[in-house]
Length: 452
Image 1 (cartoon, helix red, strand yellow):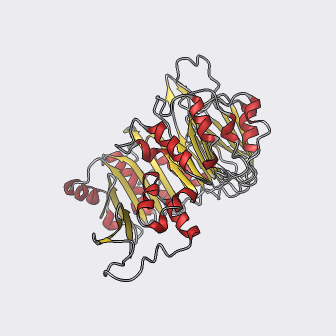
Image 2 (cartoon, rainbow, N blue to C red):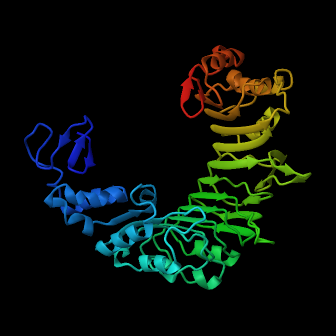
Image 3 (cartoon, rainbow, N blue to C red):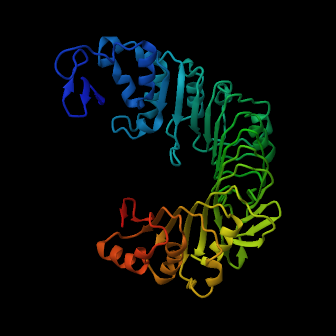
């Protein structure tokens, strides 16, 4: 029986209250409280912060458990709680002072430009609390306070997840000599960090699997040499802050050796040059984009060995890339010619996500690609088209795949309206009844999918 906790005991999914000493039929035993302390402690740790301390009122059996269970302090739930808003720092301090540890997760989120905890000494005191000893997950935002207390890194031997934001790590002495022997996820957001420091930080994580770097600057080149990393997410690594007159922005990404890398995501910095030297397991790639502003080309340049893709144009196709199965593309307008060239470059594509903004292309293909249709091996199983409006250039584009993708399973149109009239009109124009794949399903969604 599924249950949710409430102040007086448990509330079953059927809505009836169940006291801790009785089962749902009015008799029996509180089987949950009969579990070992270690199991109950794990249950408490999984609860939101605002709920885990409440377990003390469920039954006498639970009263001592919260203080000794691994602490999961999630700051977002406290900020959003109406009774705790404006009292955040005091609430966190009381929780830490009353908890005996050990620590599991400690999250102090972005205050959106305002301090939610006061002075930097407050954060330093929290991080030094015995309640956080042996911490496994740390997520801290310094509200652009450029003083990173040394206590931030006192958990380096036990951390599995580290996310740090709003601070200055540019001094090499800050991260030099650090070692994170069990860290698997590293997130860096809105941080100033030098090239030597970021390379030193990554090198200090020998079992790192996921790396996320967003809105961070201070380095122009990022080299990845990791035998463990599986996912890399890079986005917006520059700055638009007026006080930074000449910021150093990321311009070059080099994947020198990443034998386990499977996902390279959101590599869309203006003018980024990305080189994939060795990533034999890379399956997900995105976002390829074309971006021109004031006559200057800021599109991503992607190099696989001797194969070069500038923006979305395959400038040199010396070898095909067979490992990539999931590709995301952002183009000024949906352009079938470009997508066909990309499919030649990535012949084993199974999922293609597309976003186009303008209406510059007609995408007439029946005569132009008549000879190609018979020999092009379209392996796509899923196609997602964002910002779909149902205009003829988009209809022509989508119809190419409706009528020629023989193993297609899903085609998803993200639209502004899912009215019955619009869907009926599109179903007819897109020729769903003549689809090449008889198992293909077509969905129009604004968040809630409508299948036709």
